[in-house]
Image (tube, helix red, strand yellow):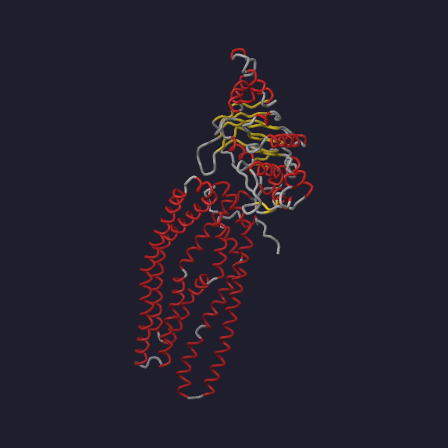
Amino acid sequence: MTDPQPKVATRGDKQPVKKILMQTRQAFFFAMGLTFVIDILSITPLLYMMSAFDRVLSSRSGVTLVSLTLVVIAFYVFWSALEWIRSRLMIRLSLRIDWDLAADVFDASFRRYVGRKNVNVQQLLGDLQSLRQFMTGPPVLSIMDAPFAFIFIGIGAVFHPYLAIFAFCACLLMLIVTYLTTKVTTPILKEANDANTEASRVAGNSLRHAEATLALGMLGAVRKRWYDQHRNYLTNQVSASEATGLMGGVSGFLQKALPSLQLALGVWLAMENLITGGMVIVASMLIGKSVAPIQKLMAHWKDIVAARQAYERLNDLLADDFENTQKMQLPAPQGKLDVVQAVGVPPGHNKAVLAGIDFALRPGEVLAVVGPSAAGKSSFAKMLMGLWKPASGSIRLDGVELSDWSHDEVGPLVGYVPQEIDFFEGTVADNIARLGEIDPAKVVLAAQLIDMHDTILTFPKGYDTPLGETGFALSGGQRQRLAIARAVYGMPKYVVMDEPNSNLDEVGENALVKTVQALKANGSTVVLTTHRPRLVGVVDKMLVLKAGRQVAFGDAREMLDAVRKLQVVSADGAAEPATVQAGAVQVQAALPTVAQGGAQ
């Protein structure tokens, strides 16, 4: 069995999960037909009991008893076979739903997390499992059984109309209790589930910072934030349980009282010679058969509500993710970058952190983005990778809007070094090759470009050394250089590096300079953000940001020369253009060592 692939056909609808369910409706109809036959067969014990009392006891015929018993056993075998077939059918249906949606849900969950951050990916992935388990368990069977309660009401009518009326009233009372239970508990349960999800998310995020939490004495504060959500969950859970308990008490009273009342009605009808003595026993069991589907609904109502919520969340997730599909395949990027009046707003916010960014790069050019802290450099790097869509303006790679380019398509053809570096569970080679098919020559070349080849060979298992949370512990510089190797794997034509030298020593910086020069010789367009002057000396263009706005953009050498002239030329004697001079002031502030020859 091959790995599931995203199915674009499942999206583009306001209710993608419903679309999948509609595609399997014939199987559902067949399951409903089996349920109808199974419910009809469930009256076999009633008929057997009535015949045993009315015919066998009166005739005292052993042959009749044996014949009836053999027929009933045959019906039981057939009944059990149909239940087995229905169970297998529902399992296959659940697997079909999981198979068609798993890849889409996985991809959409990751995209939503990148876009919104405050998202519980584990819950979204767990929703699919919850829906699949719902399809194979008692809750869905209780829904299928519910309409067939009328079968037993009809059987009661065959015996006597009063029995049918009584059974109908009993079912109606149980439905009213079920409806009231749903009306009261569903919103409370939803709030409880949401609070529990948020508490789990807070706990998970806290564990990722466990060392700093303990070292800085923050455990009490972190626990308080988690417990606030947990307490909200407990409060709503208790409220829902109390409401359910009240309705459950009413339901329990009806479950106890109705069979006795039904028996009393049957005895009275027998006393009036309207039904036989055997029918009295059947009548006493008939009410249980009529109300049983409603009781099953109530017993599994919590699971049904949870499955419904999971169904709605999956629909919302896939419907919102529709725009990330339906994209025509495009040729590999060559590195021509055009940024036109781009405005950046973080996902989930409404305040711009970048505005008025406007420049262009040709293939093979290297751009340094400089500026003081909080200038917006990291935010701009995310926009340059298409992780953030510009609120206005455009960022185009080879004429294609980056945020509209499918990451599945363009991702393997570009390089990116984020500020926060993590590695997946896998070997060093797996991570450099981006968890794809490993090309040993490309892996070694990427490591050699950043001078990590010899270092990797000293690891316990070389390129086969496991990484990740439980893998080999890397130093900060080693992590950064491996991230750079991953970014340049395959020599992509477009590479963005966010502070790639923040943890590098002098040897590492020299290797990074060599890597940038190799990319430039390859015709790759490189954009890097930096606070250090060493990298600035090997770039072609420089973009200066301050408070999220573009202060200057131009030739890097002109700006560096202007920085040096600021030391020896007075402001009124400066011969540089105004934009270059303004940029030089900002470069001097961001890279003070440039003026001392640091970028030479």
